[in-house]
Image: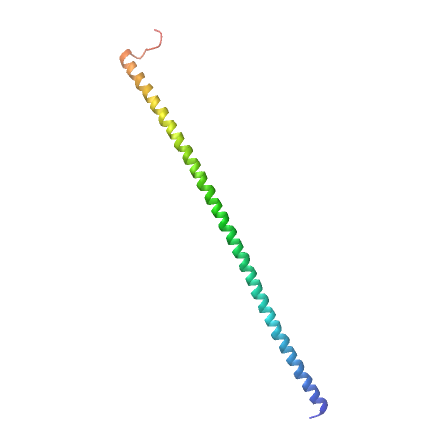
Length: 110
């Protein structure tokens, strides 16, 4: 083989080997970047899930407190209404008895 042709073939092989090495290194860097991006996304997702869990827990606590507050107010209101109803029932019973006993014109002028 001609010495110039041998040199060209040798340089071509060296060039191809350099391209193969660069390609392999490029693929390795791409895979590393993919893994880094995936890890970053996973970390972000985990942080968002933690924040969401914290927010949901706070909403549940606030809701439970509000329900308890309203339940307490409703119970107090019901007690007041029961007491007022009992008082009104006693007054109504007294009025009914007086109407039956004295007639419907009690307290009014003839």
